Amino acid sequence: MLFAIDLVVLLCLAAQLGIAGYFFYLLYWLADLPHADAPPPELPADLPRVLVQIPVYNEPMVVERAVRAAGALDWPRDRLKIQLLDDSTDLTSDVAQHAIARLRRDGIDADHVRRRDRTGFKAGALAAGMALCDAPYVAVFDADFVPPADWLRKSMAALLAAPKAAFVQTRIEWGNGDRTWLTRAQRLMQDAHFAVEQDVRARRGVPFQFNGTGGIWRRAAVDDAGGWSHDTLSEDLDLVLRTHLKGWSGIFLMEPHVTGELPQRLGDFGAQQSRWSKGFVQVARKLLPQVWKSSWSNEAKFVTSVALGQQLIFPVLAVGIAALILSMIGHGRLLPMFGSLLWMWLVLMLVVLVGMTWGAYRRLKRGGVLDYLVTAATVPALIVYLAAANAGAIVAAGLGRETEFKRTPKTGS
Image (cartoon, rainbow, N blue to C red; front, top):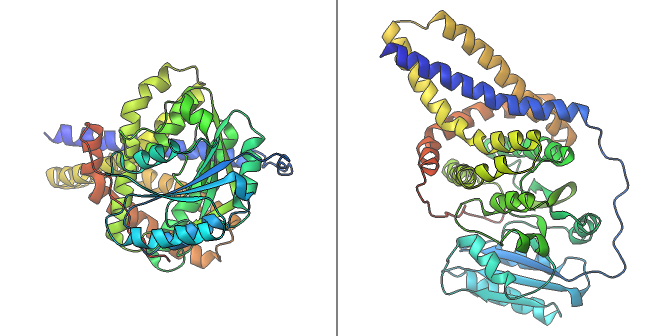
């Protein structure tokens, strides 16, 4: 029995080191790839029609602001359509109705779209909205995200300059990122995601995430891939991989950015991360066989596989800690081999943490070294919390158990 427990410890450590290899891949290319210094592309004289979709569900604190920001986008009024995709069951719909009416009074083409039920959740709402408008480009904003007025012009310029790009994703800034230790820690992790992971994967030409908001889809690519699908909790990642399997690509922009809101309570943060993690695992179950049968490069297949599988770090970490404790109890001590491996694990994880976050922290001018160290010190505690809170749900998703979409509460911060 002790041998089996020790073997579990070794396998869990090996799995974590393997996932760490993915982050070393990102750091290597971050240092090696030159940053593009070409001037941004210009918009053509004849601008296409654009549909702006805002899916909402019981979000009364943010819906009016979202509608107002969409209406302020700098785009010809005769070529802009705004849809508020409202599945709400509370007073959000009353607020939304008045907000849409104000846009219409200002001469903006805006619709308040209501469905009979929430079939397909967000993916179902987006698909239903697209069926009502044939605009060739579709921008998506979650209800708590606010774009600057020039966001659409800058993002569309990049997308129109790349005919084989299925989508453009822009960086997300956080309006409440400096509010508490929890939001600062989340912002640090999100900065690493955008300034390192998204940027590197995009410049290497391997698939990267559409983050569900702050981006624009090319309708031709969406249709080519079969449209929005709601059989996973990560409908955006699902669509990204299906478009790439059809030969499309993506564009990532550090600027312009959109501003959103981070969860301010630990429970809400855990629920959000659980939904994302389960969605990744569901997409992996659905599409990894097709990825490995595709004509993608080995690099693209490997990076995509590990990126999807990195969510397994949470159950692996939880199981590894439990097995290590049982091993210590059974042997009456920490085995010297495990002591050496743990020191190596600690050093590697610190290298990954600092490597992924420090450059992003400096690039985005978040503050001084002391502030960085204080914030970075809280990240490992959050990882352990997620391992304890979400390990079971992630395993269940891997086994095919269906899960209902749960919205993260928004306050309008």
